[in-house]
Amino acid sequence: MHIIIMIVVGFIVGLIARALMPGNQSMGIIMTTILGIIGSVVANYLGQAMHWYGPGQAAGFIGSVIGAIIVLLVVGLIHRAMRSS
Image (cartoon, rainbow, N blue to C red; front, side):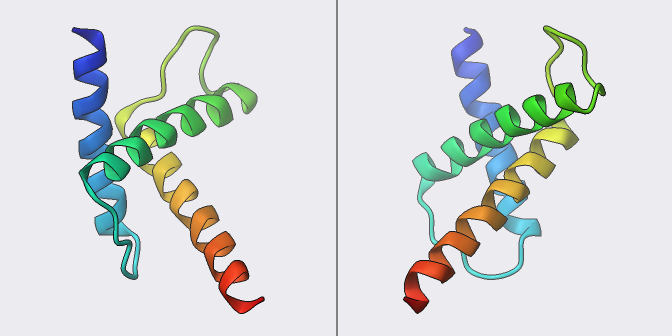
């Protein structure tokens, strides 16, 4: 059951991050879900590195959205750099 909840929350986080990020991110449902899940992992890692979250504590919903936006920014920068070369 935990995996299904993680997938649904990841999809919602991915949708919100894509809506808040300017530009066109042409992604399907699966990539949007993966974006949300990776955003949550990034937020969790950064939060623990900055001592906002303790060991074993998960990132919150807003933190996951911010993490997904960071992932979108990095992917956009990499994609732009590959296109220009």
